[in-house]
Length: 403
View 1 (cartoon, rainbow, N blue to C red):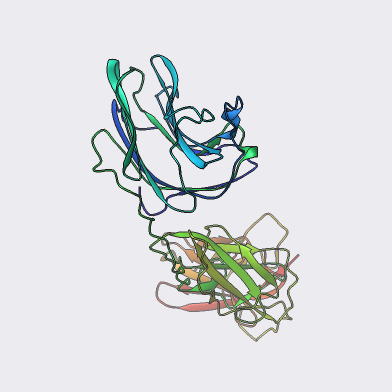
View 2 (view 1 turned 180 degrees about the vertical axis):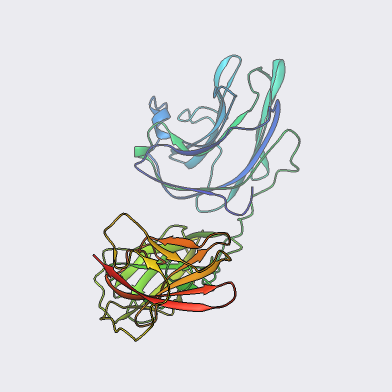
């Protein structure tokens, strides 16, 4: 039971089903569920059809702990339309209520494109102490409470679409409000259509350029990253997010709208980006009913791969090796004047923050691998480092990074 329900789309595929396997042993089992059939296309079961088993669909089945068959709902199409049958195995063998499909001696007609409620009561017991009762839309359509049914302890419930030959069947089956109990569930009644989500999900509150805090520049001309706040949808939940990239807010001229699954972050690679151009991410959510919400846009990130300008800054802080080879395996070290702790920032010559590091208290050095905040190797050139110690003293130096 709950908000979401279950939907199966059948189109030349194998069995689609979900098993609930942790059911407590039920010797007196009451099952209730709502079901709807839409656009069903099933082969006709003719009179005394020997092949009826390959022409029926099973949306609900109950089994024992070792997956032995107890009872199943079968749907079959005869010349009177779609009908429901109850197939079960008592102590004498296989049975079907009201009668086997194709015998033309009993019907439980089911109309399509509308919800129906099915209730049945299954009692485990030998020597005519077991039994089965079935209601369809509040009407008792079958009752036999004097059966020998000594292997009907329910432990597994299967919900979905099972058939001997689903290649012959197509359509959509909706199942909702499944209830399983060892006690009476109340007066069987006709199904009411479950609440349908007709509202769109909210837009993400914020879309940030980069992999963490919002950035304004990137030094990559082949990839862009973004992350965003989660959207909300109280009725059917968030099924997925979609993103697009454009040269204007809301645009999709760089990357068309793309399914991102449930992840709230993305890195799009394989791009051909122009130096000095600003790029924007747009993100929208899709709920469980397939409705998409309004898009939220980032404030953009500019590709910055231009020339460096060297300001006349003093070199007062040790950093070694300097020059530093980006292709080498030895990290660059920054050294403070004491062990009280310090912060280290690395900037481009244009003033863009590239990397922020921390020298912990008790140490006077920290390593840098030559990568920016996005984990990318920086471009060779001249950079500025700044160390701020615990007392607030700031010292700077120039760094020469080579290939």
